[in-house]
Image (cartoon, rainbow, N blue to C red; front, top):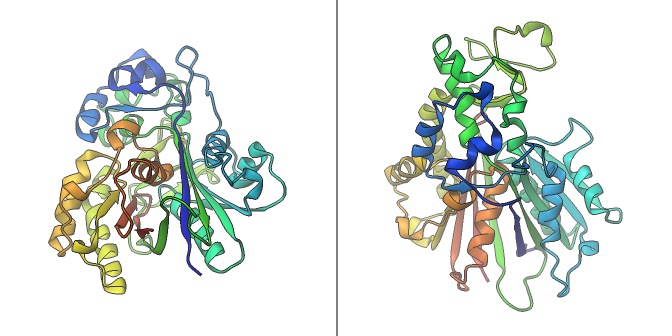
Length: 380
C-alpha cells in the first residue's frame, strides 16, 4: 500500500531570538560572556532561532510535550481532518520531559484525544525519522488508515545559565580542560526549540499536492564508532561513556554538569562526512538513485560549516546536486534536531515551489553515534 504525506505543520515558540539576544535570553554562566559564542555563530550561519523561554525570568514557557502537541494541532484545519481522526501517534525527541512514561504518551495526554496507538522513538536527530518510519510502515501495512509523526526539541531547557552550577562555567575551565570546555559550551549556540508534525495517509489529498513516500533508509555506524554527542553521562579518555546510573564513577572534577549535552567535535569532524558517503552510496546502489533525478535536496545539517563539506563529500562519490536544488531554512529557524526535517519540509511544501512529479531527497544525519537517514519523496 502506498503512503502519502498529506499535511505538514511546524511550531516555533515565542518571538525569534537574534544572535545578539541569545545570552540575554539564556543567561550568562557565572555572569561571564561566552568566549566560544562568537566563533560558533560565525560558522553555523544561524541568524535567528526560537526558545521556549521567558525572556525576563528564564522560566520555560512550554514543555517538550506541549511543543509537540502544538505541532499536531496545526495539522487540523477544519477542512475534512480533525485530531479525533488520528489512528496512530508516533513521537521522537532527543530529550523527553521525563525518563518515563514515553514521550508520545505525554503528548497524547496534552492533546486529550480518545484512545489510540502511541509510540515513542528515542535518539537524537534520527528519532524524528524513526517515528516517521514507524508511522509510514503502520499505514503501508494497512494497520492504520492514517498516522501522525512528530519531532520535537526543548534544547533551551539545558542551555539556560540556570542549568549550570555556579563556578562551573565552561569558560572558567578553558585553561584547565580546553577541549572539554569547548565541547560543552559549543552546543549552547547551536541548538534551539521547535516541533514539526506530518500526517501520513493511505490515499493522497483529493485536492492539492501530497508527497508520496517512496523509501526511507536508516543506517547506523554505532557498531564501529565511538559516541560523539551525548547527555546524561561522562566520556572517559578511552572513549567509553558512563551513564547517569553509575553515579559512583562520576566525580565532581570530571564534569561541570552530568546532564549537560556534549559533543566530541574532533570525532565529529573525522566521521560525519565519511559515514554520510557510505550511507548515501548504499541508497544509490539499493534504489538506483542518481543526482540528476533529484529536483530538491533537503539536508538537515546542524551548521552551515558542514554545507560545503557535505556537498564535496557527495560529489566525491558521484552524487553532485547543485546548490540551486538545495532547500534549507536553518538560518531562519535554527537547528531543532529531530524537528528540523519536518520544519524544512513544511516550509517547502507551503512555498508554492513544488510541482507534481518532482522528486525530493531528504538527508538527516545524527552525530550521537553516527547514524544517517535518506528519504525519497515524490510530489503527486
